[in-house]
Image (tube, rainbow over all chains, first blue to last red; front, side, top):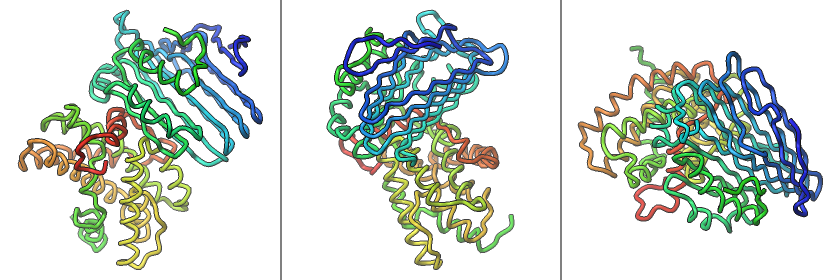
Length: 231
Length: 213
């Protein structure tokens, strides 16, 4: 992996590039980033991450983010695309100081529908852990094994893509009704704490997912979305 | 089938008559029916099977077992369980029912349980009486889907015999989830009931609501 640091705005932006071009069995990817007191950091990826067929074993991708007092982290990777036979265990751990801010999204696409890809044998585990002052603030985990087409038909009305978004900021509540108005029927948003907005969305495919997410991310990031996110 | 005092106490705790207000919560089902995602006996049974196997049923079973394990620290588990709540109403449902459960159990059985979310409160109370964890989990899952089948009867055209048929069809799955969660701890938590979570979120803005969740 390597990172580019474009000089585009006041905040530090890092574009993470997986030079291997994708993840497969046995790969281990780890990322650690920290925003020190009062700093702003935006992390994204240059392209969608691809989890390819694993001949044996599984790939792991573990990221740890830390935001110190008054700092802000925007974790805005592009989609993770799961291919047939993919075996991936992924985790994201975020440690926030009491007044740190966070905007994070994790979009996942279950095969590229336009290419006729169908996922019948996939193993995908994903975990998000957000702590504030060392205490659990928001936890989420999913585990999809086997025939994803059959499972998503039941669990998500046949959706081919999904995303989870978390926004931690004092003004979170003020965005709730506007964010809800931007969501399609298959998306929901809720205020879990006065300063924590959580959102979950399933969509027909990666394109529809991105189309729904873009205006929401523009709003919550204050129009500082990395250019790689544009449709 | 062996009968002892604990089994009668457990069935008292999990009876719809126990004052938790369970009948006021639909766990997002009201939204799913409004959206047409659940509309008849078959789609209701699918919805409840997914909840049991991939969603709150499995998750609650793990929390009950965690609260009943040796050396369990209930307040830490409670903080973690709250952080796993995907939606505000889901949290309120677990919090209010857990609070009502603890209040009644403390008053009637002279315990001094702290306020906990419902599955932890039940597990904690069961632990004080050394109940059998499998029995607690199986009866809880049965009560959980039983409450949602009753909710569905108030929300869509759905006869009482059909309702009992759906509930009866879910019995083997309640037993299977009881068995599969036996060795699991909160480290094994996950939930794939995506539409259920989204329904819980959308319920907050549903017009003409009969239920609190």
